[in-house]
Length: 256
Image (cartoon, rainbow, N blue to C red; front, side):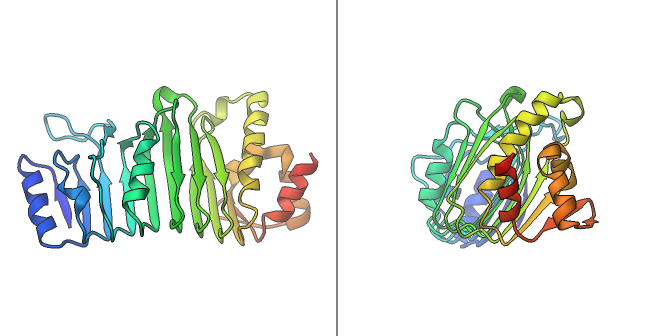
């Protein structure tokens, strides 16, 4: 169900919940919290991009404050878009309240650079992160610890720091890169960022299939580009170089 905001939307949401809804696609910041105690929801998509008085979209992130009591026992897939994360408690509470959550998608969201975002879950299997920025274009930290994660799709940002831990079950990783600031980065900054990405890639060493965007490889530059061209000789498909195993690449990076 796709909902459009109006004055009585909270009432309609409550009616829908009482009808044992299983999938909800909501473009609205709920003012009441019955939504977060729905025992039948399996798929929840929240796009919290705010509106101005004329009901036109404005690029403004909404801060979602979870209620004290959150319980979504059947929720398996959660999509969050245009959300402002405050402190780390949001994710901690979310995973504790969603015991069977397997898929998490984060798109076009903001994080607090003082606390970052911590994604720590034993049941999470699929994670997608795209356009996750720190407030005021500062650097922020994104930490992921998910021992049962099977697929990871992440578009990294040059201003963020990434801590990838305990990804022992990872099968497929698709890593891209945000284009902003790339053209104005100095060689020193590119080298610093390349070292950060080396750590990032090292955490993906269990992946059976790794896809790196050409832009990311360009920034890594002298660290791995020559090695990829010499030992893999992989053609690009739609601007992406595909590598069957990350292990050999990581060994080459460690020697640098």
